Image (cartoon, rainbow over all chains, first blue to last red; front, side, top):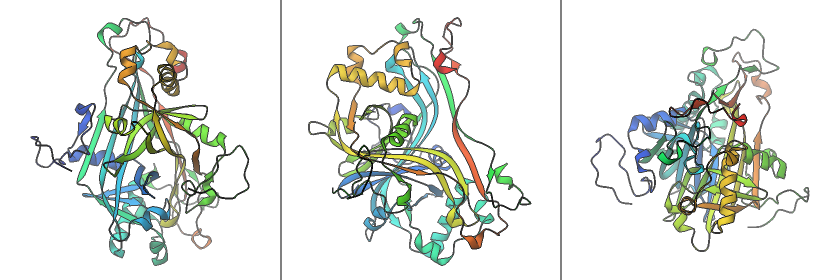
Length: 222
Length: 222
């Protein structure tokens, strides 16, 4: 790993050879605000690690507390076991899809998206207090306020759940937004061109069949 | 890699040690119909590979033609270069998030989701005819019919775009659906419990500013 000698905001993440895209470098972002917003908005991430020397990518959930990313380890015991005791080399990537970009030319079709890639060595969280904070963060990540509005995990449940911590050091975001970028000679072609915005929409909450009908819908769900 | 000796539909994908989850095995699916539907619905996938011996996970787009998954290689030249000539060991994972599952207990919070994991050795598509078919499939994956309604790629554009092909052999799906699964002793707790359905919603298409206003909106966008 080496650092590029670039002029940047001193509070930005420092690009490395692994977090500098080889194409579309103008889409790369290293400022903490952009990175944090994407991590905080994305409901899930994809955790990459080596299993028997092969790349494995599993979906899971995450939450950020300051400059630490917590990753839920319920996707399997494989990465959990591999993580002891030296930590687990991982790549955690999360992507928000914001729109379809339909150009006149096949070549310039694209998606609008915002993604974050975090590389590093994840450690299993052992300390019960940190694990409890991470658990709360994972719940509040889904809907802020939920951690205080459910039965907290007991000692057995905490022990049964693996949580990884990954420091936000080798981090980059990539953002593609805006409109169609057709070549000038294509703009007169008769094909429709434009953007179809996409968003993850929440439908009305469906109460559990055995929920007491007197239970009010919490404010964080309205 | 070894195969589990299970009784399954002979047309199902055969589970291997890498595609058998270590937890929640009841959520695993190996039937082609489930796998195909998820791959066909998901707009993006996450491509995992080894870069300098480390796991790297990048978002990209994909399309399925029969039992071949084509993966767009515009995310960087790293995986493209690494793929020659023996192919690139990869894990391609795609995940659809269908809902938030809010239980009374912190422990039983979950997401409803459908995911597919494909492992294997990807090959770079060299044959121009196959590459053109893959290109069309990537466009029609976004909106069926689009490939025939835009300017096709010319030879230079085809050469500038890398496409991977990955046979659907070592494949599994995972599906979590349904409702809340609280422990019986928790069901009387006063917390709201239920599911918040989620879906990727398309908003009205936004024409490019320089689009001829007489251009009709194609049927695949209405």
